[in-house]
Image (cartoon, rainbow, N blue to C red; front, side, top):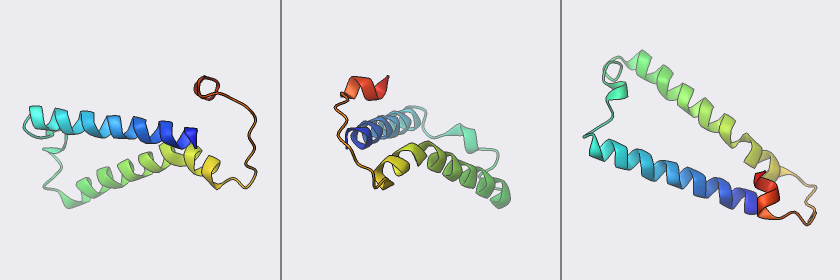
Length: 80
């Protein structure tokens, strides 16, 4: 559970940072060149989806494991 909570906190922090940055810059200029080309935008969007899934895999594997054991590790030991 602590692994999932740490992951969710880190993703929420990233969400807040990206929203703040887009608000301060009046948009996200990284996609200005491709947002009018459907195929290019679709490829970028799909790549981001694959990236999010890849980053989430450790959490998916831990939460999907049937072998749940309380091995006495602390949060600090999980992080390091």
